[in-house]
Length: 220
Image 1 (cartoon, helix red, strand yellow):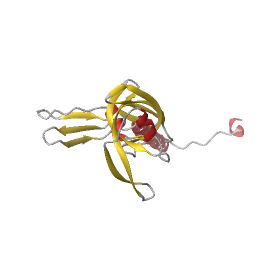
Image 2 (cartoon, rainbow, N blue to C red):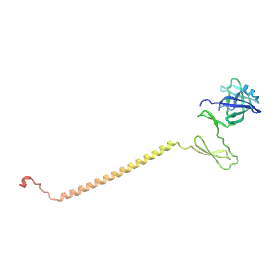
Image 3 (cartoon, helix red, strand yellow):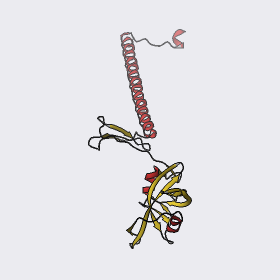
Image 4 (cartoon, one colour):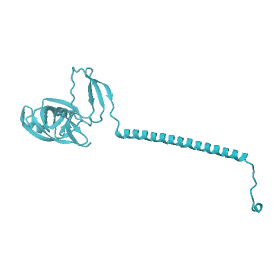
């Protein structure tokens, strides 16, 4: 998919006038965002807790965490971030994306507003949800909080066209067979008529007397 880098504004939640912009890498595999500790301390943001993490190579490390206010493309919201050390990258994680109501657009390699669903605990009717990408539909029982029916996405137009084309070919084959049967019957009837005529002519010739053909010498 490639990397997505965006500029986000980060502010001290207790004093939002202390605010600065930072270029960060979007990482949907990270739960928390990670911001350089020096950047956060310049804004007066102090760590609140310390947690243990495991790195990709299996090492166990500890990092401090604190709260910040994020701003991006007209959206804003509070989130908890890791105080990154000099060797750590500046990362925007899933918690921050959820807070801002954003998701990754893998085609255009950018962030876009995510589709938000609202479920009513006392809803009496089933909910019908349609996927904006594939067109499949789900029926959700709000009481059970479970999917009770799934309607697969519609078939691609190409498949429908092939089906119609196959029907057309079958219809043409049926018409050809009917035409052949008609012509075959007509030829058979014609042959029967010719045979009948020949039989009648043969009978007539058989009943007539045989005459000797005239020769030139007979005329003289």
